[in-house]
Length: 247
Image (cartoon, rainbow, N blue to C red; front, side, top):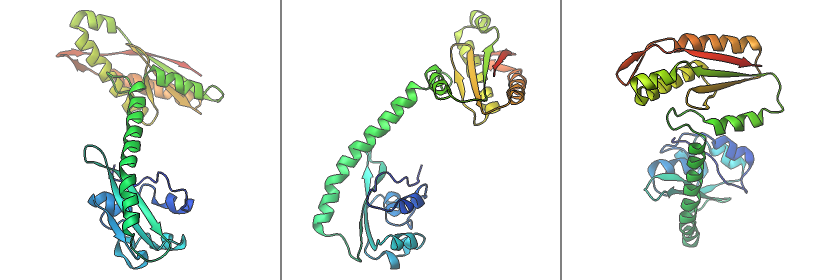
């Protein structure tokens, strides 16, 4: 998303790498931010007097860093995945040998980062309902396991009324459209609270660290939001749902 996320820097102070987290890349964002933005290697032989380091040099100098050589890590599709940087405790540029070390490391970094992205995507797909884009039952079970020792949380179970009738009358395409429409409405009402699709017509919302009255208010808002016409496969349907609460 165009922002820096420190990945591995075992020899740099934690305070320094933490300060770089979420920094937006750009042509004047140190060496790494500039390399990611420009898509080419950036050599800063003197951090203290380089304009690209104006907003970060205090942190770098305090950590004993005087120079930095950063190179972009490209994916197999040519996209910038990250950067690989060498820092130096003195004012200087990298030697040809040091540059060759970086060139040898970049392909290994590419393989590692692409593998990591594939793992994250596979995990996302494993926990995502294909029709609605909501978290699925596997993600719901995982959330429940993490809440098993917690106190003061509520579970809202939402069932779509008469989904079978919609499927039988207008076809499964209309039923799928109805499920998707209700999923969007549930997400709108729930806001940042995750919504799970457990089965064909069943959804769930976990409200942790909540009083019963909060769960009841959320349930009422859900029913109001759902009770609006929806166009499903060319048919106008007035959906309704049933909500149960476990505290």
